[in-house]
Image (cartoon, rainbow, N blue to C red; front, side, top):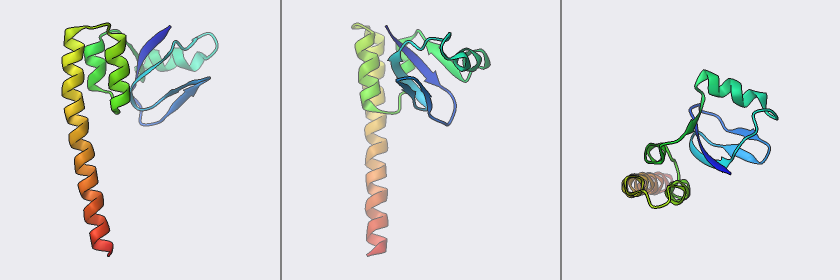
Length: 109
């Protein structure tokens, strides 16, 4: 069963086959019995299991993650709208990064 996890740290966490990047992640449920650190991270608030798919979209850092969350929401209108808004934000970030990269390349030449 897939779950939505919000990794509130600035580091990647790996538990078996689940790799959690900073921000929102969709992964197979992580067995806390196999990975006691997961329970500790949840208790400390560094790792949050997210139930509200619309809020999960706001912390997704890639479009593929946004798409996965929207798919998990099973047609929830609020999540779909949040996904569209986040896509616009991510597109803007990508455009700014490409522009910066272009400027840096021009300065080198």
